[in-house]
Amino acid sequence: MERLNKHLLSRRTMLRAAGVAIGLPLLDAMLPRGLRADEKAEALAPRRMVLIARPLGMHPAFFFPEKPGKDYEASRYLKIMEPLRGEFTVMSGMSHLGYPTVHGTDIALFTGVSPAGQHWNNDFRNSVSLDHFVAERVGILTRVPSLVVGTGPAVSCNHKGIGNPREQRATELFKDLFVDGTAAEVAREVRRMQDGHSILDDVRDQLKTLNDRVGPEDRDRIDSYTTSIREAEQRLQQYQKWAGKPKPKVDYKPQEYDPTLIVDVERQWYDLARLALQTDTTRTIVISHNEGRAKIGSEVLDHHGASHHSQDEKKIEQLASIEEAEMKVLADFLQSLKSITEGEKNLLDKTMVLSASNLSNASAHRTDNLPVIIAGGGLKHQGHMAFDRKNNKELSNLYVRMLQQLNIDVPQFGCSTGALADL
Image (cartoon, rainbow, N blue to C red):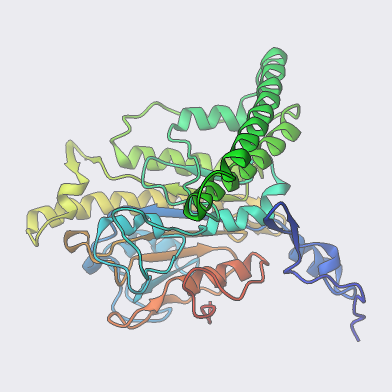
């Protein structure tokens, strides 16, 4: 009979200080004492997550299969993913319920914030995004708590709904992650971080004084900024801890691409994400893709113009060419993770990769029946999970299931009504 740990910690144990609650990573003390060594090693092994935001959806007729289950017939786009069948699940009939048919819902893609009382074009009140929520719990274990990259919408938010800073240049990200500075540069960076602490101390003191002179609504706004300041302090502490440690060395050279050529840029973001995961530099990544142009053969096509096709067959074919190219670089990314061995498994087995959009049919700005693919991560993949395309399943239910897979035990996230079962 398994001997229980009398001092067993709950997986919901939180550290609380200065108004911030930080969850702990999975610890030995959270596991039963009788757990076998191999099961314990598996439970404590790093688990990772990549979130990919697409601004213009996927053409539904070419994306979704008709038949549910594992033996679905691959759609035009999913034929590109056929070598990975069994490694991913495509979902239909999912959305954030109650969101309006506007572009502006992109900022809530990974938060699932309640739509009640929202003004989508101004004074929008967002909530914490999935990546930030996860990074608070596992980010202390790596050099970089989380990577937020890309030139698309600001889809990563802190607990006050304020957008997190993101790196928009792949060459700069590569330098930050993998290129060591000289001794003088490292010393200068440490001094800069110490100066940053001093600046934040000054700003916090000024805000405290200001807080006593304003009304309740302004105090709420100031509280949002003080939350950002506390998080900036935490990031500085994290960076300072790692400043003197050598960065991992990788055999890769980033290229300077035209930032408007979306497929080339996407491929490079995926390359850098793979390297960051492989070196355990971070375990949480969010990539926000942008709309732009795509070079398909000798043609350069306009993504936004093609997505707003108004049923023009020529534009739909242009859109299909672009989206097939995007699916190809996503498939290559997943294959690259699968090719990297980690213990008895591979990196894809240990990494959940979610690709989604706030739009389904961009031509009509539809926000229901979103194109959702989740791959890897040790999930029980179901092929095509088909929900009601008119009365959709809440997308945040998937987020709760993903948190559970990361050993983060929470009952609710965003507007979830429970955890998505059978995955």
